[in-house]
Length: 102
Image 1 (cartoon, rainbow, N blue to C red):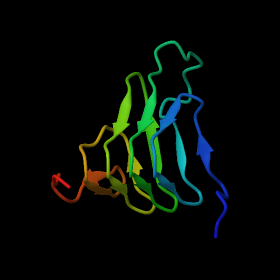
Image 2 (spheres, one colour; image 1 turned 90 degrees about the horizontal axis):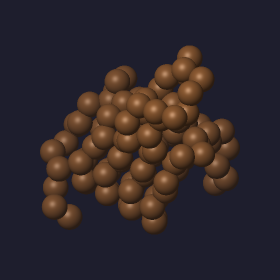
Image 3 (tube, rainbow, N blue to C red; image 1 turned 30 degrees about the horizontal axis):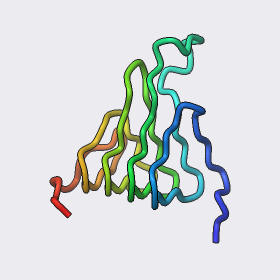
């Protein structure tokens, strides 16, 4: 068990039910040079999402939503919202599977 080691979550992160967040995951700002939080949206991690080891979710001026049932692969860097029941991977992350109605 990893017990959440190395997880970083921005205070504007909303996390749904049954979400799995593995070690060394970061959810935060994609524009660290901007000192303003006024324009910064929220980050929504919907129900049944898996954020695999070392994955990163970065938002800038608008909300970013990781859709229900989505898996973000290990070490992927997500810069945009996803649909539901998708698998995303890579740097920057791209959709690897089409959305499914599950």
